[in-house]
Image (cartoon, rainbow, N blue to C red):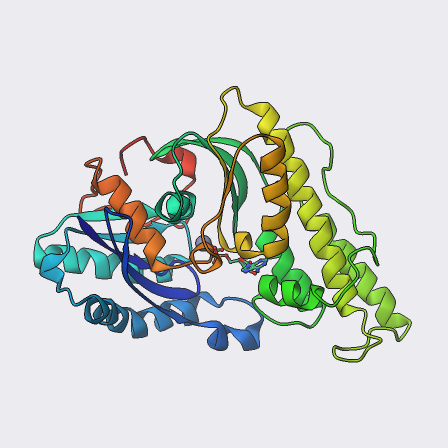
Length: 349
Ligand code: KG4
Ligand code: ZN
Protein backbone atom coordinates (compact mmCIF):
# COMPACT_ATOMS: atom_id res chain seq x y z
CA UNK A 1 0.00 0.00 0.00
CA UNK A 2 1.51 3.32 -1.14
CA UNK A 3 0.15 6.78 -0.29
CA UNK A 4 1.13 10.18 -1.70
CA UNK A 5 0.86 13.11 0.74
CA UNK A 6 0.62 16.83 -0.02
CA UNK A 7 1.25 19.60 2.53
CA UNK A 8 0.63 23.32 1.91
CA UNK A 9 -1.01 24.69 5.06
CA UNK A 10 1.65 27.20 6.08
CA UNK A 11 4.98 28.16 4.51
CA UNK A 12 6.33 24.81 3.36
CA UNK A 13 5.21 23.17 0.14
CA UNK A 14 5.96 19.50 0.66
CA UNK A 15 5.20 16.13 -0.88
CA UNK A 16 5.93 12.67 0.51
CA UNK A 17 5.46 9.07 -0.47
CA UNK A 18 5.21 6.27 2.13
CA UNK A 19 4.17 2.63 2.21
CA UNK A 20 2.53 0.44 4.84
CA UNK A 21 5.90 -1.11 5.74
CA UNK A 22 6.68 2.28 7.29
CA UNK A 23 9.15 3.13 4.56
CA UNK A 24 9.62 6.63 3.22
CA UNK A 25 9.85 6.10 -0.52
CA UNK A 26 10.52 9.72 -1.47
CA UNK A 27 10.10 13.26 -0.24
CA UNK A 28 10.55 16.75 -1.63
CA UNK A 29 9.93 20.22 -0.23
CA UNK A 30 10.24 23.87 -1.14
CA UNK A 31 10.71 26.35 1.66
CA UNK A 32 9.28 29.86 1.38
CA UNK A 33 11.45 31.33 4.11
CA UNK A 34 13.20 33.78 1.77
CA UNK A 35 9.89 35.07 0.38
CA UNK A 36 8.51 35.81 3.87
CA UNK A 37 11.71 36.93 5.58
CA UNK A 38 11.36 40.66 4.72
CA UNK A 39 7.98 40.64 6.51
CA UNK A 40 9.16 38.78 9.62
CA UNK A 41 6.34 36.25 9.33
CA UNK A 42 4.19 34.33 6.89
CA UNK A 43 2.17 36.47 4.44
CA UNK A 44 -0.86 34.33 3.41
CA UNK A 45 -1.14 35.67 -0.17
CA UNK A 46 2.56 35.15 -0.89
CA UNK A 47 2.34 31.67 0.64
CA UNK A 48 -0.60 30.59 -1.52
CA UNK A 49 1.07 31.75 -4.74
CA UNK A 50 4.36 30.08 -3.84
CA UNK A 51 2.56 26.77 -3.13
CA UNK A 52 0.89 27.01 -6.53
CA UNK A 53 4.26 27.60 -8.23
CA UNK A 54 5.90 24.56 -6.68
CA UNK A 55 3.45 21.79 -5.88
CA UNK A 56 3.30 20.09 -9.29
CA UNK A 57 7.10 20.14 -9.57
CA UNK A 58 7.37 18.47 -6.17
CA UNK A 59 4.89 15.74 -7.13
CA UNK A 60 7.00 15.09 -10.23
CA UNK A 61 10.17 15.06 -8.07
CA UNK A 62 8.90 12.36 -5.67
CA UNK A 63 7.70 10.21 -8.55
CA UNK A 64 11.12 10.51 -10.23
CA UNK A 65 12.95 9.79 -6.94
CA UNK A 66 10.92 6.66 -6.27
CA UNK A 67 10.75 5.43 -9.84
CA UNK A 68 6.96 5.13 -9.48
CA UNK A 69 4.11 6.53 -11.53
CA UNK A 70 0.73 7.77 -10.28
CA UNK A 71 -0.70 4.41 -11.34
CA UNK A 72 1.43 2.68 -8.66
CA UNK A 73 -0.07 4.82 -5.89
CA UNK A 74 -3.05 3.51 -3.92
CA UNK A 75 -4.39 6.76 -2.45
CA UNK A 76 -3.73 10.50 -2.39
CA UNK A 77 -3.76 12.41 0.89
CA UNK A 78 -3.68 16.20 1.27
CA UNK A 79 -3.78 18.50 4.28
CA UNK A 80 -7.28 20.02 4.32
CA UNK A 81 -6.75 22.19 7.44
CA UNK A 82 -6.23 23.74 9.85
CA UNK A 83 -4.05 26.42 8.27
CA UNK A 84 -3.94 29.40 5.92
CA UNK A 85 -6.88 28.56 3.72
CA UNK A 86 -5.45 29.91 0.41
CA UNK A 87 -2.47 27.61 0.77
CA UNK A 88 -4.46 24.65 2.10
CA UNK A 89 -6.66 24.79 -0.99
CA UNK A 90 -3.65 24.48 -3.31
CA UNK A 91 -2.67 21.07 -1.88
CA UNK A 92 -6.28 20.01 -1.47
CA UNK A 93 -7.14 20.80 -5.11
CA UNK A 94 -3.99 19.14 -6.40
CA UNK A 95 -4.77 16.01 -4.38
CA UNK A 96 -8.36 15.89 -5.52
CA UNK A 97 -7.36 16.50 -9.15
CA UNK A 98 -4.91 13.57 -9.12
CA UNK A 99 -7.47 11.38 -7.34
CA UNK A 100 -10.17 12.27 -9.89
CA UNK A 101 -7.91 11.90 -12.93
CA UNK A 102 -6.51 8.55 -11.79
CA UNK A 103 -9.70 7.29 -10.14
CA UNK A 104 -7.96 6.78 -6.79
CA UNK A 105 -9.25 7.38 -3.26
CA UNK A 106 -8.70 10.80 -1.69
CA UNK A 107 -8.02 11.40 2.02
CA UNK A 108 -8.45 14.85 3.55
CA UNK A 109 -5.86 14.99 6.34
CA UNK A 110 -6.00 17.13 9.47
CA UNK A 111 -2.56 18.77 9.76
CA UNK A 112 -2.50 18.31 13.55
CA UNK A 113 -3.30 14.64 13.22
CA UNK A 114 -0.42 14.35 10.75
CA UNK A 115 1.95 15.77 13.42
CA UNK A 116 0.29 13.53 16.03
CA UNK A 117 0.81 10.29 14.07
CA UNK A 118 4.33 10.91 12.68
CA UNK A 119 5.97 9.06 15.58
CA UNK A 120 4.06 5.92 14.58
CA UNK A 121 5.93 6.00 11.27
CA UNK A 122 9.38 6.61 12.74
CA UNK A 123 9.14 4.77 16.10
CA UNK A 124 7.30 1.73 17.43
CA UNK A 125 4.47 3.55 19.18
CA UNK A 126 1.11 2.01 19.97
CA UNK A 127 -2.01 3.68 21.38
CA UNK A 128 -2.67 5.11 23.92
CA UNK A 129 0.18 7.64 24.16
CA UNK A 130 0.58 11.00 25.78
CA UNK A 131 1.20 13.59 23.09
CA UNK A 132 2.71 17.05 23.33
CA UNK A 133 1.86 18.88 20.13
CA UNK A 134 3.91 22.05 19.80
CA UNK A 135 4.07 24.11 16.64
CA UNK A 136 3.83 27.64 15.32
CA UNK A 137 0.07 27.79 15.66
CA UNK A 138 -0.72 25.08 18.20
CA UNK A 139 0.24 24.01 21.67
CA UNK A 140 -1.69 21.22 23.33
CA UNK A 141 -1.39 18.02 25.34
CA UNK A 142 -3.53 15.10 24.26
CA UNK A 143 -4.09 11.48 25.01
CA UNK A 144 -3.91 9.79 21.61
CA UNK A 145 -6.23 6.77 21.90
CA UNK A 146 -6.43 5.81 18.25
CA UNK A 147 -6.52 7.23 14.73
CA UNK A 148 -9.09 10.04 14.94
CA UNK A 149 -9.47 9.63 18.72
CA UNK A 150 -7.75 12.35 20.73
CA UNK A 151 -8.66 13.46 24.23
CA UNK A 152 -7.50 17.03 24.84
CA UNK A 153 -6.02 17.41 28.31
CA UNK A 154 -4.87 21.02 28.00
CA UNK A 155 -3.83 23.73 25.59
CA UNK A 156 -2.61 27.28 25.37
CA UNK A 157 -4.85 30.03 26.68
CA UNK A 158 -3.05 32.64 24.54
CA UNK A 159 0.00 32.22 22.25
CA UNK A 160 1.35 28.94 20.90
CA UNK A 161 4.87 28.10 22.00
CA UNK A 162 6.26 28.38 18.45
CA UNK A 163 4.69 31.84 18.23
CA UNK A 164 6.52 32.76 21.44
CA UNK A 165 9.84 31.61 19.91
CA UNK A 166 9.08 33.49 16.69
CA UNK A 167 8.00 36.76 18.32
CA UNK A 168 10.90 36.72 20.78
CA UNK A 169 13.35 36.10 17.92
CA UNK A 170 11.96 39.15 16.15
CA UNK A 171 12.41 41.24 19.33
CA UNK A 172 16.00 40.00 19.61
CA UNK A 173 16.63 40.90 15.96
CA UNK A 174 17.42 37.28 15.09
CA UNK A 175 14.96 36.98 12.20
CA UNK A 176 12.53 34.36 11.01
CA UNK A 177 11.66 31.55 11.68
CA UNK A 178 12.51 32.14 15.31
CA UNK A 179 12.70 28.70 16.93
CA UNK A 180 15.85 27.38 15.26
CA UNK A 181 17.54 30.83 15.49
CA UNK A 182 16.85 31.07 19.23
CA UNK A 183 18.13 27.52 19.73
CA UNK A 184 21.29 28.42 17.82
CA UNK A 185 21.87 31.75 19.63
CA UNK A 186 21.20 30.10 23.01
CA UNK A 187 24.17 27.77 22.55
CA UNK A 188 26.54 30.60 23.43
CA UNK A 189 24.44 31.93 26.31
CA UNK A 190 23.98 31.53 30.04
CA UNK A 191 20.44 30.26 30.62
CA UNK A 192 20.44 31.62 34.17
CA UNK A 193 21.38 35.18 33.12
CA UNK A 194 17.78 36.45 33.06
CA UNK A 195 14.92 35.30 35.21
CA UNK A 196 11.91 35.11 32.89
CA UNK A 197 8.48 34.07 34.17
CA UNK A 198 7.31 30.47 33.83
CA UNK A 199 3.64 30.99 33.06
CA UNK A 200 1.10 28.82 34.94
CA UNK A 201 3.92 26.85 36.61
CA UNK A 202 2.50 24.52 39.26
CA UNK A 203 -1.13 25.41 38.42
CA UNK A 204 -3.76 22.72 38.28
CA UNK A 205 -4.38 21.10 34.90
CA UNK A 206 -2.03 21.34 31.95
CA UNK A 207 -2.94 24.53 30.13
CA UNK A 208 -0.20 26.79 28.80
CA UNK A 209 0.27 30.55 28.62
CA UNK A 210 3.11 32.20 26.73
CA UNK A 211 2.06 35.79 26.11
CA UNK A 212 3.46 37.00 29.46
CA UNK A 213 6.80 35.47 28.61
CA UNK A 214 6.90 37.29 25.28
CA UNK A 215 6.06 40.57 27.07
CA UNK A 216 8.83 39.94 29.61
CA UNK A 217 11.34 39.55 26.76
CA UNK A 218 10.10 42.78 25.18
CA UNK A 219 10.42 44.69 28.47
CA UNK A 220 13.95 43.36 29.07
CA UNK A 221 15.05 44.23 25.51
CA UNK A 222 13.66 47.78 25.88
CA UNK A 223 15.43 48.14 29.20
CA UNK A 224 18.77 46.99 27.76
CA UNK A 225 18.34 49.25 24.73
CA UNK A 226 17.63 52.26 26.97
CA UNK A 227 20.86 51.52 28.84
CA UNK A 228 22.80 51.09 25.57
CA UNK A 229 23.58 47.50 26.53
CA UNK A 230 21.81 45.76 23.65
CA UNK A 231 24.89 44.91 21.56
CA UNK A 232 24.29 42.76 18.47
CA UNK A 233 25.84 39.30 17.96
CA UNK A 234 28.85 38.66 17.51
CA UNK A 235 29.92 41.51 19.86
CA UNK A 236 31.20 39.62 22.94
CA UNK A 237 29.17 42.05 25.11
CA UNK A 238 25.92 41.02 23.35
CA UNK A 239 23.19 39.95 25.79
CA UNK A 240 21.30 38.20 22.95
CA UNK A 241 22.72 34.67 23.54
CA UNK A 242 21.87 35.02 27.26
CA UNK A 243 18.37 36.29 26.49
CA UNK A 244 17.83 33.43 24.03
CA UNK A 245 19.14 30.82 26.48
CA UNK A 246 17.09 32.20 29.39
CA UNK A 247 13.93 32.31 27.26
CA UNK A 248 14.53 28.75 26.07
CA UNK A 249 15.00 27.60 29.68
CA UNK A 250 11.73 29.26 30.75
CA UNK A 251 9.91 27.55 27.86
CA UNK A 252 11.47 24.18 28.63
CA UNK A 253 10.53 24.41 32.30
CA UNK A 254 6.95 25.41 31.46
CA UNK A 255 6.53 22.52 29.04
CA UNK A 256 8.07 20.11 31.53
CA UNK A 257 5.74 21.24 34.32
CA UNK A 258 2.63 21.02 32.14
CA UNK A 259 3.49 17.55 30.82
CA UNK A 260 4.21 16.40 34.40
CA UNK A 261 0.68 17.49 35.35
CA UNK A 262 -0.77 15.73 32.30
CA UNK A 263 0.69 12.42 33.50
CA UNK A 264 -1.37 12.89 36.67
CA UNK A 265 -4.57 13.60 34.75
CA UNK A 266 -4.95 10.31 32.93
CA UNK A 267 -6.18 7.06 34.36
CA UNK A 268 -4.45 4.80 31.84
CA UNK A 269 -0.75 4.06 31.61
CA UNK A 270 0.39 5.55 28.29
CA UNK A 271 2.80 3.51 26.17
CA UNK A 272 5.04 6.53 25.61
CA UNK A 273 5.49 10.27 25.80
CA UNK A 274 5.43 11.47 22.20
CA UNK A 275 6.15 14.92 20.76
CA UNK A 276 5.17 16.37 17.43
CA UNK A 277 5.15 19.72 15.63
CA UNK A 278 7.95 22.09 14.64
CA UNK A 279 8.96 23.07 18.18
CA UNK A 280 9.64 19.40 18.92
CA UNK A 281 12.75 19.81 16.74
CA UNK A 282 14.35 21.71 19.65
CA UNK A 283 17.09 19.58 21.22
CA UNK A 284 16.91 21.24 24.66
CA UNK A 285 13.19 20.40 24.82
CA UNK A 286 13.86 16.84 23.68
CA UNK A 287 16.50 16.31 26.35
CA UNK A 288 14.30 17.58 29.18
CA UNK A 289 11.29 15.52 28.08
CA UNK A 290 13.43 12.39 27.77
CA UNK A 291 14.27 12.69 31.47
CA UNK A 292 10.65 13.42 32.40
CA UNK A 293 9.38 10.36 30.50
CA UNK A 294 11.97 8.21 32.22
CA UNK A 295 10.71 9.41 35.61
CA UNK A 296 7.24 8.23 34.63
CA UNK A 297 8.51 4.88 33.43
CA UNK A 298 7.68 5.35 29.75
CA UNK A 299 9.90 5.82 26.69
CA UNK A 300 10.20 9.23 25.05
CA UNK A 301 9.51 9.08 21.32
CA UNK A 302 10.20 11.89 18.92
CA UNK A 303 10.36 11.85 15.15
CA UNK A 304 13.68 13.10 13.71
CA UNK A 305 13.72 16.95 13.68
CA UNK A 306 13.14 17.14 9.91
CA UNK A 307 9.87 15.22 10.33
CA UNK A 308 8.78 17.41 13.29
CA UNK A 309 8.61 20.56 11.16
CA UNK A 310 6.03 20.56 8.38
CA UNK A 311 6.66 17.94 5.70
CA UNK A 312 4.84 15.85 3.12
CA UNK A 313 5.78 12.47 4.61
CA UNK A 314 3.66 13.04 7.73
CA UNK A 315 0.61 13.81 5.57
CA UNK A 316 1.18 10.69 3.48
CA UNK A 317 1.53 8.64 6.69
CA UNK A 318 -1.63 10.07 8.33
CA UNK A 319 -3.42 9.39 5.03
CA UNK A 320 -2.15 5.82 5.08
CA UNK A 321 -3.28 5.27 8.68
CA UNK A 322 -6.77 6.44 7.68
CA UNK A 323 -6.81 4.64 4.35
CA UNK A 324 -6.11 1.25 5.92
CA UNK A 325 -9.08 1.81 8.24
CA UNK A 326 -11.25 2.55 5.23
CA UNK A 327 -11.58 6.23 6.14
CA UNK A 328 -11.39 7.98 2.77
CA UNK A 329 -12.95 11.37 2.00
CA UNK A 330 -15.42 12.35 -0.72
CA UNK A 331 -14.15 14.70 -3.45
CA UNK A 332 -16.45 17.44 -2.12
CA UNK A 333 -14.73 17.26 1.28
CA UNK A 334 -14.27 20.90 2.39
CA UNK A 335 -10.96 22.41 3.49
CA UNK A 336 -11.18 24.13 6.87
CA UNK A 337 -9.06 27.01 8.25
CA UNK A 338 -9.99 25.87 11.77
CA UNK A 339 -10.27 22.16 12.45
CA UNK A 340 -9.75 21.02 16.07
CA UNK A 341 -8.54 17.46 16.56
CA UNK A 342 -11.51 16.70 18.80
CA UNK A 343 -13.81 17.10 15.80
CA UNK A 344 -12.28 14.06 14.15
CA UNK A 345 -13.98 10.76 14.66
CA UNK A 346 -12.26 7.47 15.20
CA UNK A 347 -11.56 5.99 11.80
CA UNK A 348 -13.45 8.73 9.93
CA UNK A 349 -12.43 11.95 8.24
O1 KG4 B 1 4.98 22.43 12.68
P1 KG4 B 1 5.58 23.63 12.06
O2 KG4 B 1 6.66 23.44 11.01
O3 KG4 B 1 4.47 24.55 11.43
C1 KG4 B 1 3.22 24.70 12.05
O4 KG4 B 1 2.37 23.79 11.89
O5 KG4 B 1 3.08 25.72 12.77
O6 KG4 B 1 6.14 24.52 13.26
C2 KG4 B 1 6.77 25.75 13.01
C3 KG4 B 1 7.21 26.32 14.34
C4 KG4 B 1 7.77 27.74 14.24
O7 KG4 B 1 7.21 28.52 15.26
C5 KG4 B 1 9.26 27.52 14.46
O8 KG4 B 1 9.91 28.65 15.04
C6 KG4 B 1 9.26 26.34 15.41
O9 KG4 B 1 8.24 25.50 14.92
N1 KG4 B 1 10.53 25.61 15.43
C7 KG4 B 1 11.34 25.53 16.52
C8 KG4 B 1 12.50 24.82 16.10
N2 KG4 B 1 12.35 24.49 14.78
C9 KG4 B 1 11.13 24.99 14.39
N3 KG4 B 1 11.17 25.99 17.77
C10 KG4 B 1 12.17 25.77 18.64
N4 KG4 B 1 13.33 25.13 18.32
C11 KG4 B 1 13.52 24.64 17.08
N5 KG4 B 1 14.65 24.00 16.77
ZN1 ZN C 1 2.75 21.98 11.45
